[in-house]
Image 1: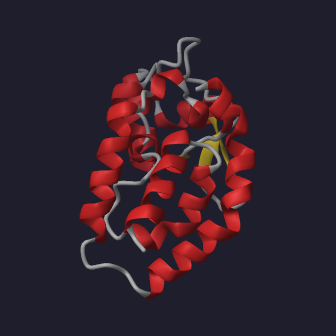
Image 2: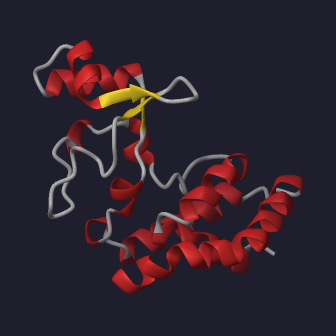
Length: 163
């Protein structure tokens, strides 16, 4: 996994134009059964991928925090939402709440999450490859391919199965 992770950025960069063309084609002509195909590819990939051996998403990027996320996590940590915001979050250029820094504050040395049961929606859904109407999040997926080995593998499998 470590070797693949080290190469992932370069691999994603090499495949960028190919992936971009693929997603443009997918948007223009979306198979009726795309959600089913994606769910199958996603499920197969995550049967063989253990996120705890990687956690690159937690180490290199931070999720967006919705107000519901903030309230839920603050309650879990026995804090007021404003205290949680001041301690852990900042507002980014898109006016979204994000972590003050990465790697994630809540990531343990063994890649476990301190707040796993109440983690942000963005973390629960990452890498978003089982999302309905998958073709609508092409730009997000293009970014995730460079971060997540599973997302990379899923897109490569998509290109084989959806011609």
